Image (tube, rainbow, N blue to C red; front, side, top):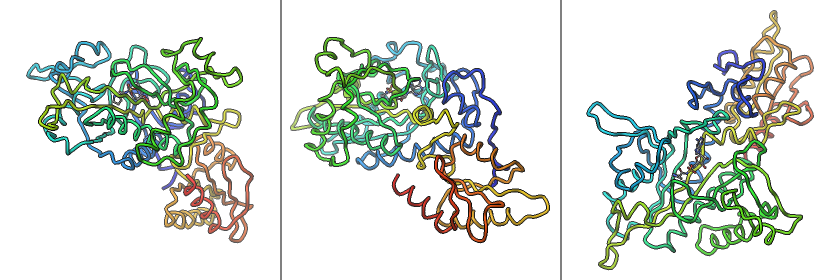
Length: 443
Ligand code: P5A
């Protein structure tokens, strides 16, 4: 693919309407375009990053045995009246009437819809547990949409739902998602801490917010710094192992400001470990027992008795994660977008020095592209007639982790090769491909 053919409307300067880095950069590098307040179009570069994030989120849901479905964005108000949330949800819910004057809504979340699907299909406890998820657009008519796609009105969410027979089994399901979230954020090279949080309009009394540290975050957090050392690498998908993992985390004080209590914080956290800062909520998990199953009559037969199923729900802000990764990783001084290679829009930029009277650099670039393509490296050729340094600046800004320059300094089969933030080396294409492939494996 040639860079000149791509639809990447890059701006020269930071747009003045954006306050935070991720919003500025996403507009500047043509990743998104606002279509109305809090509503965005995703252009090729931004869409590519989001799809890569989505795929990692999906793989980690599948890994704990959750099954993917797809529910619609538009829902009937009937089920929300059954659960009692139709009035409670207030002005954040976008309400619509169809041509038959039926009350519909654009789903802000799917607890009701999934409960309806479950109750009409599952009758026996033998079918439990069920873990179902989908990745779908949501709409919340936020009072103050801001910071670009970080707090917007239409956003892309992965939401999962669990159904179990007992509290104990439901706790097992909750813990599976707890682990799956840690693994997901780890693969995105984010250090996300699970924090006790309020349950808000979703309900229930057990909930963890997954928060990454960032000055521009909207959540105020209070925690014990030692929580960053807990690691889930050895955790198995078994009850005891998962319980232990949660205990290890819950040993340390970590709360968002709704749950903050000064004297508890000071009592539980020695002064040198106290951390009070801001963060971005990238995921949120909830346990709410029979809050929806009881009013909506979602039950199974167990030993001759009707048992309302015990439910939880689990959300990841897929579109928000694009901005969150920028906030966490952008190198302001050098203007470098440090995407983890697993989600970078392209893995390698091939940059030939363009000479109007001689096509050989461009031809070489095409051969390198072909070679890398066969090795499944996602590359791009920059055929624009610009000098090297402005091209490198551009690819640093967009965040393409590897760059190959073909020009005066590339001799014989040696190419100038650059890994963002590292020193340039002269290497043959075979070695370059190995370095890139290795980096992908580590991730
Ligand atoms: C859990 C899944 C829920 O909606 N129901 C289904 C539960 N939780 S939540 O915390 O309200 O949202 C889950 C995640 O979605 C992201 N998010 C947003 N992203 C961008 N703009 C918004 N306005 C917005 N609201 C929520 C967050 O990452 C949140 O953790």
